[in-house]
Length: 171
Image 1 (cartoon, one colour):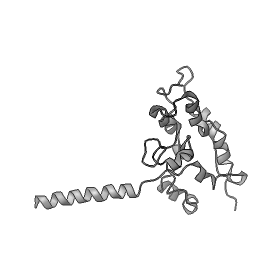
Image 2: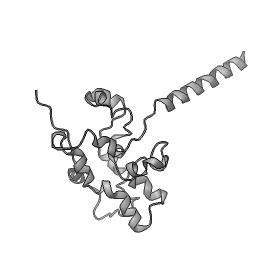
Image 3: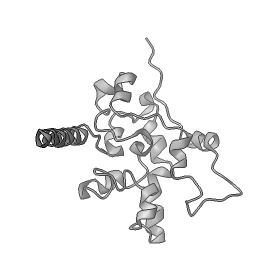
């Protein structure tokens, strides 16, 4: 009887773990986001990002010779150390080699589909995150080599530099 219970619990753990992996979200990269978030009619979201320091974050590391440093990559690329993030799949190096959309909005494999994105509740259920100050402080903190205690990170001020919105739909 004890053996059956143990085997049952083991099977339950396996099923639960498999379900978690199967329903996890994968990183897709900013170029996939660009398909729907580029141009005036879409609020120039991709263009705003592509002109930001976030879009060029890996280049900063390359210049300093730190582009292989895990401590730096954690904040300068998308999904470093995660199963489908930067470095996990060499075909995605370019797509994930920056602080892309998914660093702030979460891995996009499930919410990137048009039918999901058009429904905010569905998008949130599918992993779309709304970034806040806590999101930014993951990297913009005292552990950063560029942190200046005399000039701390100011969320409201910094957010204005990267703020982007889809235009409101008119009926």
